[in-house]
Length: 472
Image 1 (cartoon, rainbow, N blue to C red):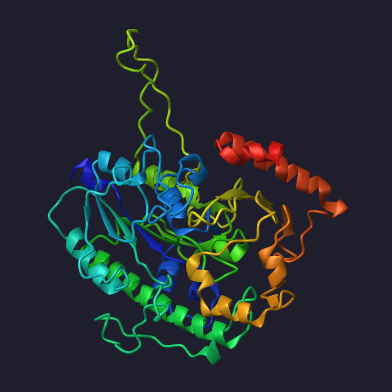
Image 2: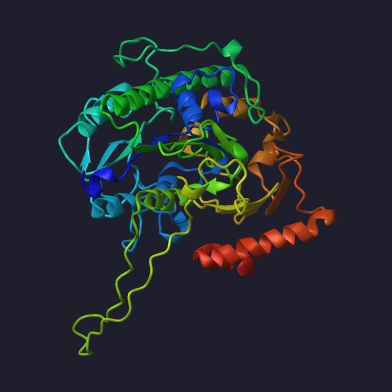
């Protein structure tokens, strides 16, 4: 057996617009037996966070280990947004390619440009826009089983449970249950749904939430098929499996916000080397940590950045200069897998600027222990909406009622649309982020400490918006 043969394989599964709506996270209605089993076999993180609750920007962080404000990927890569990553970035797929791994993308991509996030191959055929998760797993099995002695990195990204943008809001195809061959549809009734506190209990919300859960069940079926594929091909004992989501549920109050439903997400890691199973970790980790963790686990190091060379044809001698170390913003948590309360993992940051290009609302976030501080840089603007959230029956019903003082979940519609510049919450006593402590004199020291840490982090990560502390 060669050294390459002994290196672990890696499968990263990224769901689309999923929060903590899984059985293993305490949801009593959802049907997610395969993900629940994965959690029972590995480590389930309860304090895992995306850095921005927007699909494309979040995926750039997942695949780079860098905050999106530092790499130019401020929002959506597709359509009129056309945000893309700087050419200096060394992404996870390219680093794995260079390290001798074979790499494959199945499902949603949503980053740019392609050379920066290059996968050796794709297997998209027959996946119906990455919603036929069982077909995706079948494609994965065929690729894994190909004769190739190299270890593999599979990036497996279903579109579920993202909204479909059609009359069939979550693409469940109720009129054609055989549309996703091999998947048994799981139905939920509006009356049986247990709505989270951040949503209003209205008929249209219950109906949408039930359809959302159908899409989650379809996602879970594909995860089960993928895990079986690893077992059938003899790779379940030498493959690191990560499951996570890009951002929270596709409802106002979660996706695109910096509130907990938008950024506190599932993260399940099954390490075949780990002797302890069913671990529940309280470590604070975020998506900037994923690339460093995978590279660390696989023994892959990013080579130094090339030396800066003078422009050609200047008449000046070209000097080699010095190679500079390549740094990630995140850090590896490979060494704490299996630990419930590791020391030194009680602080994290988040950074959101755009979703769609017309949705300018930069927010910077720090969480330390029980406190969370949100800086709403454009607080003078009304909070913007992603096009799919604005068009949802949930929000359209809010508009029809025309009552700004009506509660939308735990806050009024007015408060949801108009944010203070500074938001400070004690998440132990106020988990739904209702009582803003930022103007409470008793919390001024805490607020100032968090603001100092946040500004220092912005400078360290080259955040262009750090100037707003002075100019606005």
